[in-house]
Image (cartoon, rainbow, N blue to C red; front, side, top):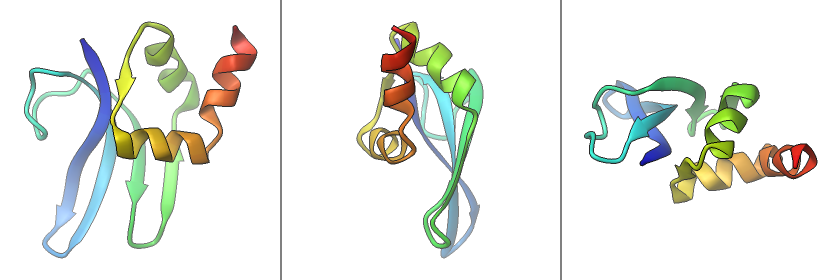
Length: 84
């Protein structure tokens, strides 16, 4: 099963996260299937590859709680509903 979750990057005390599609059995820093976005909680910036995210969501990928909140704020789920 594939999940959309955060992968930690950056340095100490200055974390930034990549939003990745990854197999559930992989570690947090494990090999990802595809990078689909970027999230900086300190500066509150988000960059999303919406077509790639919709591709994985259509095929049953489950977002984690935090990624779900990020996608909801960016209104990705509205686009998913419009496609159906």
